[in-house]
Amino acid sequence: MQSLLATVVIAVFVITFAIQAFQIPSESMENTLLIGDYLLVNKLCYGTGNGSSNSVLPYQQIKRGDIIVFHYPVNPSQHFVKRVIGVPGDHVRLVNRQVWVNGLPLKEKYVLYSSPVHDVYRDDFPQVDYAAPGEEGFWFKQLKEVVQHGDLVVPPGQYFVMGDNRDESLDSRYWGFVPRQNIVGSPLLIYWSIRSGEDGLPGPVTPGDKLMHFLYGVTHLFQITRWDRTFRLVH
Image: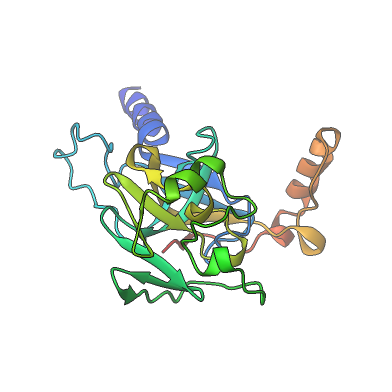
């Protein structure tokens, strides 16, 4: 009985404080993460973000290139997943899609470009002379304050993030920095991945179709699962 209770307590602790499940809802991180990937997120890897108890365990520093899950600053009830491009103090700019950090080109083997169209705001960032479609109004005003000599300067306690699918990502270019306290953790692995569309789970569905949607998933589990992505580490 005691061992069962201890197991339950440990499981509750892990679920509540250490690990969180997260589903990829969009194509913004393709091809690193796909729509239908289900992740386990390590909530303890970066500590609390407020300095309290961070010296107890050997927490990691948030680095350029890390994939993070965070509360969307515009709507904190939503969770986003992006890659860290700039850490506090970094000078960031994009020139013809190439990211430059502190005067050096960033090597990014993970990046996907899905559109042949060149967009000046998206691909030659930052632009302070006009507001781009999809850009938040408050960010248009703040952007002018954090640009120096054509570079975006990341303030203390803030992070500049972008999706790996650069042409289909609503990221820091459009709504600004991620505050340190918004960061939940880092994805550990893909514990399940399902196809959608003709070869997988049908969607989107109306509320009345949820039961049929669920039954289809159960009866076609082996067909819709991307077995080559299941239990894949995220990096």
